[in-house]
Length: 146
Image 1: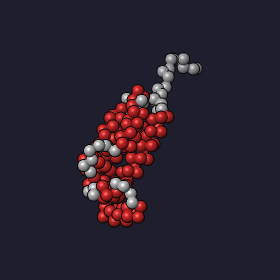
Image 2: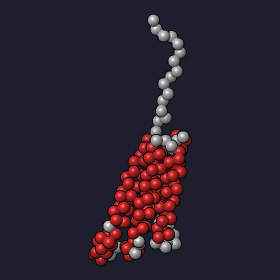
Image 3: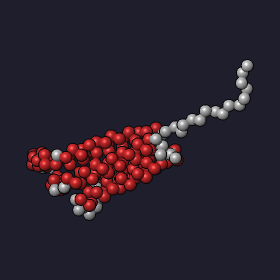
Image 4: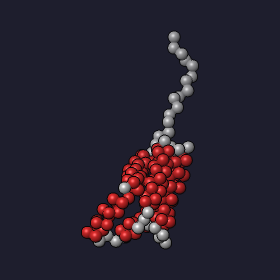
């Protein structure tokens, strides 16, 4: 005989918005590549400086001298900050609101790091705009996170 007792509907997981998924994937790509390059440059700093000097002489790039004067610790620190941004994006991918705060803190640190290590008076405008845009777009998805 059939069981006619009322059944509770199966609990559904909250759906992750497409925008959030796309933002996380873009963050994985950007922060992942920056994490990798920061570790490689910090680990092989002397080789990096030599190659960058040869490249700068050949192509006359503005601002390369500032980069060449930067100590290897800068690249290591920014690698750690990019790892923090990556961790925040992973948490947001799993709809954890904490990830937004982690991501935001590390993005702010990534904006401030060149100012501290390179003694710049102002933040880099493209970095400021991209970080601000991503933080804004991630904040639009906070209502889906717990």
